[in-house]
Length: 313
Ligand code: XMP
Image 1 (cartoon, rainbow, N blue to C red):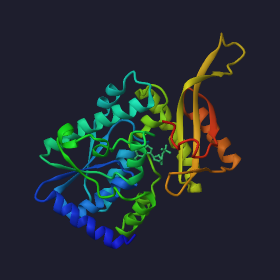
Image 2: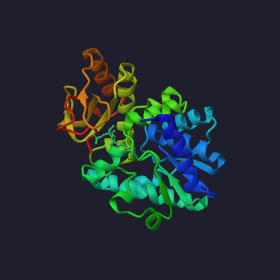
Image 3: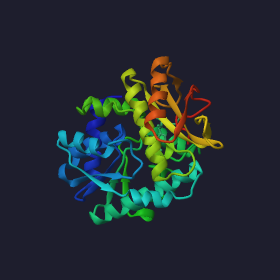
């Protein structure tokens, strides 16, 4: 791929598609939507409004970190706290695919309201090729796939979508980010799910359960990131495990189970498990079981992709 040519073409294309209108870019903080933010900034300047929806299922300090890192490169980001809408929508749902769809619907409903309020007609988004492939194949619903599966965003939510990265895979997006002068910390971010920690909670997504997995995920990232893996994560199981209480404990007590996963991959289509040194694993177990209330068991998942996917749902 000729990265310079790609950038020139996409800037031109965004300018043409948006015309004299205003556009909204839905930033998730991941590398894909961050690259789109920079392309759109170059193409449209102040005619693009960058919105970060705080869905309540983001990682620790994510909204603040993203806002400040973009402001450093002169791009203003507006953070909107819409977390109550998401927890309300997800209430009582346990099925992984249905939770993804509920997340997607809430996301676009809220975004549609914002786009209409700002009188924009276009929504820019960082959809990439594997997102489309996996959704079409019925493997899992990526939250940003609409027109490719027959949902007309204009009819359904009131805006047109512009997807400049639709033909690229992850490593190509990173090349584009690098060429655009994006800070290393942004274009080399670890992949994270559009539906956020919804994908890391098996069973019902509640504020309390998200808080557990957020804390565990943060510990996993703090301990493993120095190894520079492709991706590491924590998942909260629905089942509970028996807790070893003290001698005087009455009856049986149960606590939560967290799975830790760490993989190496080039494009997330296949993945190998990282051989994490045992002392790091032991430290993670110790920190999670002492710092995250209610968690009493931690397992390390050593399954490659295939047969498993990287995330659990
Ligand atoms: P799986 O679990 O399918 O994940 O092996 C492949 C890669 O995609 C990420 N992923 C997502 N990214 N929206 C995204 O932007 C999503 O809905 C989504 N689901 C999975 C996952 O973290 C991994 O890097």
